[in-house]
Length: 195
Ligand code: GTP
Ligand code: MG
Image (cartoon, rainbow, N blue to C red; front, top):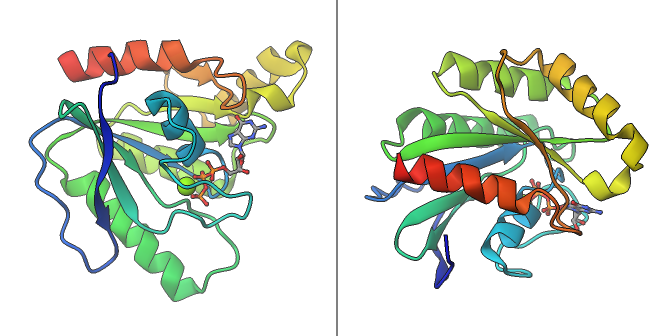
């Protein structure tokens, strides 16, 4: 897709009603600090339209980025962020769950996992829940630039095994720093949107 226009169109907190978009949506989920907002910026060719931070818990709302009036990228708040209260966590969880459950335009979900670490219990729960909801999550192994090339295959295997992915699951290594993996992700998104 040639990106002509990108815009943060809708921001939803717990109390907001979700937008009734008429164009396909693709959502990006994953634990806090895994690189969701950085990936969305890289896909849009923007440095900082989606706000990123080295402190986990930056994105606290569901943010819908309109691309060319053709599709939306949905930036979700991260889960597993320790420094928020239990009630806050539950509200975020419900907000994410409600969105994934009810959006009529949601075509695909990308689940981001840090390539350096084995998936957490929350990652596994999220993956299983997505599968249960009928999605076939696409896994993005983020922060590829942080490991040696010789470690990549081993870490990808650990991610797949840790999540116990279904056969045929797509796993793409990605770096927001080098942009490695960006084209592959766009190829997939183009297919998803056209379909
Ligand atoms: P929340 O909004 O808190 O859920 O986090 P997020 O998943 O949106 O993460 P964000 O994109 O804000 O990135 C978190 C930190 O990781 C930032 O300091 C980013 O610069 C860094 N980061 C993200 N992706 C990469 C990457 O591919 N390589 C490197 N080296 N750093 C990255
Ligand atoms: Mg974020």
